[in-house]
Length: 260
Ligand SMILES: [Zn+2]
Image (tube, rainbow, N blue to C red):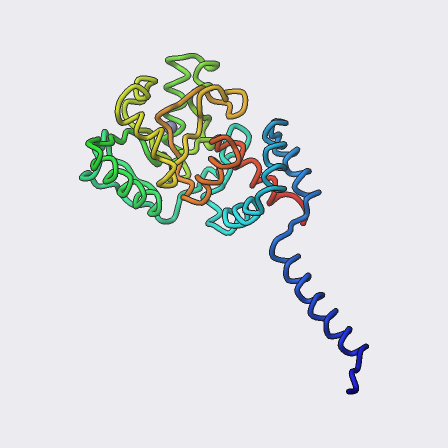
């Protein structure tokens, strides 16, 4: 039998090469970029270690990150003490909230995805015998001016800055944020507050200013202020970032800023 050994070897090598290339493009990312991004995002050392460990043991981290990056940009838009929205920024699909599944303290509106999710979450809460009460939702720039000035008058500038955003720097302008009632620390002691703390992330909601992270978020604990980030990102925050939204959003923000 006449076997052409060199051509068989070339065929085998070609198959191997194609497989390797496909694997590389699907499953790997530049880990040196990842290190730079984690530093730029000012993640604490323990989180960097945790993410590096996750990378070694659990290839899902990269897939999960890419899933978050492929979602709507507004879901991961960083709005904090350093990053503002333009004065004229108005979400393009605001819907007026209708009472029914939940109660409204005042009129409100949210982006469509957030409003729909709020409906689903409220139905689930109701099934557990809890009625969610909505205090504050989308706030346009002009209204933020009013709220901030009022807080400065009542609390003084230093205290006001711990719990209210300067105009343009409020997450409420994203149309993705709900303040649940009552807007005080007491909410955490109510059944609704406890239910939210346990269940909100299943529906894509994330507490923006958790307890003990004022140095990270710039805001004192606000157990009433939840931002809709979508289910994928909420899971990403919980799985890899200790449930701290600020870390995850800063990480994704820096990832998109970094050179490829
Ligand atoms: Zn709020």
